[in-house]
Image (tube, rainbow, N blue to C red):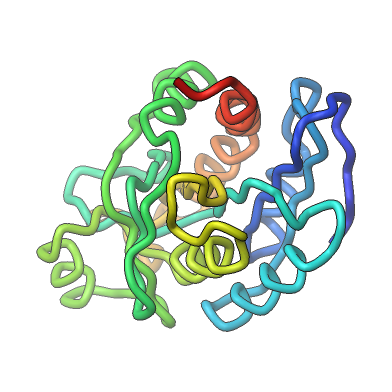
Length: 223
């Protein structure tokens, strides 16, 4: 998995992504402000691989009590989205149910500061076991989801199930932050794919300070 201790003494943060290029982007970002141990876990593509990798990681020390963020690229479902836009899930939806995310508003504010000028969209992030195209994209959007990927829902559901408190008030903190690389008017099969991919990669490299701010907020006393 690759353990990368941070300078502080706070609880760990596990950032899960599917692809090597996503892991490279996240690992190459600025990590000096991490309030505790941080690792970027590459799960592999698809919900089954995500479930297995996250479950295995959270069964090891020191990650048993880690907060979890699912990150990487995604497909936007809302017309008007562009490659490089950010998605902050308020919930993830999958075949195993819906998982509510922690600290969504704080993450949005932190991302606006970390990646100025980029649009940040908030709403449901839905899971799929395959790449979504055309009519299926429109159908998912009509159901209220704003973006789709193959791992976030499985990652967060697995993380919550592995926690001591399930979905209760003391549940494991989880979040999903994705960068749009594929959107209704900018599908990957079209000319401009490379430019869109570079834009999304640069945005993904810039998100770590926002993740650390979210992580740090978990250490504050709750009122």
